[in-house]
Image (tube, rainbow, N blue to C red; front, side, top):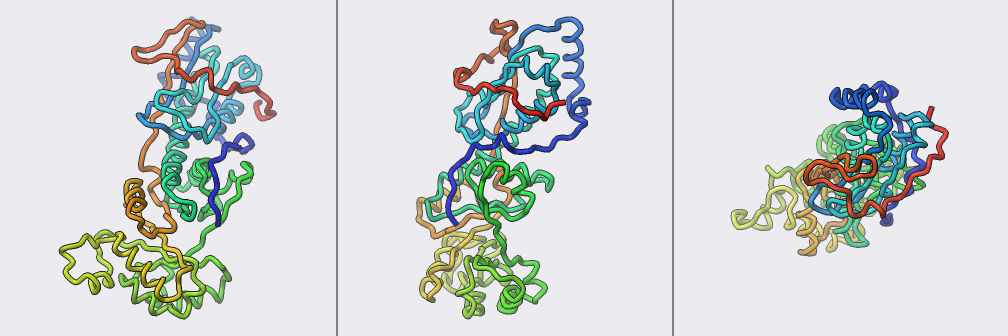
Length: 374
């Protein structure tokens, strides 16, 4: 396994869109009415719609390739060629208030897609930004796994995989997550591990579980979860003969519990914060592994509650975490994308507090080349 750098080769992705988009099925009624009135009373004027980063911090842009594909899917070729479209490539980091996409042309030709564009840019950039911020805190020997539970809806797995890959992630757990990655020429690896559901069916007997698993599936990257019996050291002792077969162990203990091996070690637990997956547990496990000829085994932290600040703290304190397995963490911070008309017939005209972004001239101009549009 090796770390990948952020990528932006995303315009070859064959994105999937609902045919009902062109029937305004996803456009709010107020916008539909505005487009109809504009077409009747103010046709053929030139407006500039700008999509900007309204978050107070830097973000990693993602979704602009998808928006370009959306425009090609939704707008007639003749109209599309008349629009002046500019964008920031996927994988670019921009500042607060910077623009990441703009469309200039007749409002009635594209205005009805405003909310779709905003939502795509916000969701994909949120995924990429959260993933990127975590990757920036990892050293070259650490890695990141994108679990299926990162997606708030199973149908979003491919799009969350797209956002995570743009940020530089390459370890995934489902086929859906990598649906678009081949189009991006982005290499990836699947991560497979022994989950608690399998351990439960073997009555918590980890030794038997590992033997059965290896008899049915050969792998050099076997990962096993060590929280089922709430005694990590005891579990490791029981599977000692299989340590050479393990690539990593996953720690995913509920915050309501304290691992029994820690209680035995620390005695008076009132003086320590030992609940859940904590640095005491990680260091305790690392020490046991190193003292038992298992230096090769990596430690994975997999928890719904771990945050970017937790990862930063572990980094400051040199806590021996090798891999973080993200669950809901890709949705921790939401990127806010603002969309506004900022010019009318080449004259500045915008709501109070809104104006043409300073980086507008740095955006890349789009040129229609696709066969996709009807």
